[in-house]
Image (tube, rainbow, N blue to C red):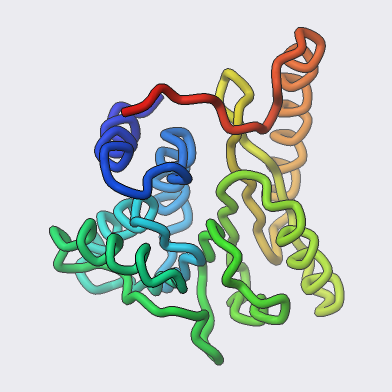
Length: 212
């Protein structure tokens, strides 16, 4: 497990409203995905109290103005906590209460329910979507939108070694090599899930954490 991700998770676990924050695995995977894809425009749907926003702010700082981000959170209390928790960063996402219209993004980080079904028109060519957890309903809406728009895509899950809640990645207009990599990863993930299910362990579920 990424030590930086563990430390950031522990930091946010000690804050008010931390019951639904992203897992250390999701935090580490988002950092990795940001530097793999190097998006210039990022939309975070569901800012919460700011755990994943912190990862994005760190990325924006290193890019020194070559990238920008928007975070969407409609709960007033969470917005207040988000502002307080992200205060150390000079470069950070701009906080909105709903998804801005007529904007396009290279990466969407999906960690909340604020994305309207038709909001997926915001995906730029070859955009990617990082889904924290499962969010089956929202992923179904996304697949339906891409299918209706005749936009090809590939998707794959990724879970931590204990097979608890992980993430999903979706890439639009993938190359043949990216399709092959995503397909191979799906097979690998399925192969790792089978022994866990055989032994009665929950797969893709949030693990019980001791109080911070």
